[in-house]
Length: 394
Ligand SMILES: CC(C)(COP(=O)(O)OP(=O)(O)OC[C@H]1O[C@@H](n2cnc3c(N)ncnc32)[C@H](O)[C@@H]1OP(=O)(O)O)[C@@H](O)C(=O)NCCC(=O)NCCS
Image 1: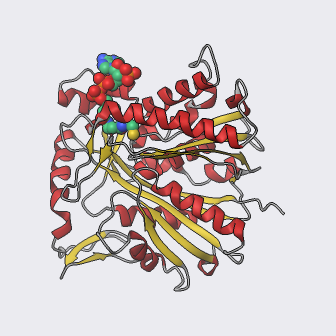
Image 2: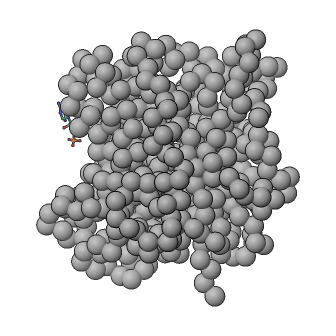
């Protein structure tokens, strides 16, 4: 018997601060068009000094878990490439702050931006195999994308987390089992152990992403219904990994060329545009970027998507990539709209470029930050005491 497995609920957390990309372009002396149209970003999230991968993960998870009995969660995986410790997983902090049961299996996964997908794929197989014994999985993709001030990657930063409750009663998206995988040892993006900033061979990373997309997409077709012209027409929308919105546009054109489409850009508005409405206001959230695009489709697409097929492409530098598909569950769009994601973004505060630079510099010393005397709001990073990271609880 085939078990229907997929996402039952989702949650999003974004920092309460952002910069305007036109202002950043002006401050860096580059044409505004380069950041806003060339990169495709309007606003970029900036984490405050009391926000980190843990606090973003917890806030996203609390949204996804509203009304859920925590006893039903038997697996929790946090995918991240901006962990807070070389040994203790982000997931342990999350388990404590959320109050997940002690019999819940918890761990962290790392493979650049693919880490969250690694967790999702494990959860899907855990449920399909029956090892879950009726329980659900909580998969969280949480990251702070940081390339550093005045670097080529600066306009492709961001921060945020997406949480997904995965179960055999999916009320948002049910996934097909056919997953096309493509792995290739490349040096396109990495973050050495001694550095808080990522190192990237930017133009090469775009090439690697597109090679991996073609490889994973072909693999998905070959192990599924077979390679057919215009294969991707079956998808009402495709959610791509979005390090920056323009990358998804490039990806879509490359995919349609694989399909043999003579006008590869023509389907962009129909299949990709609504998936970029949230990413273009948040920026890069690494592991969560693809899932932010999924939220964006469900939140912003004006069409009724009930029962429609979606495509998904995940890419993690280094590299590993996957292409797979799923079906929108009836009522999914209303459920996502009720999360109030637009209001969440509206409630943020815009930083001046000077404030942004100050915060970026202050973040360099966070791992040794001494707790202050002032009270910190719930689920925030309070500082480090005796080598122990402290977080405020509810
Ligand atoms: C993305 C990245 C490679 C861009 O690098 P860059 O050399 O500074 O930027 P480019 O010169 O390529 O310009 C970016 C885009 O803006 C366009 N552009 C430049 N000036 C412009 C202007 N005035 N108006 C409109 N568009 C403009 C360019 O044509 C280019 O578009 P294209 O990619 O469609 O050709 C860089 O920001 C980076 O390294 N980011 C991190 C790595 C990453 O996200 N990789 C993704 C794969 S995982």
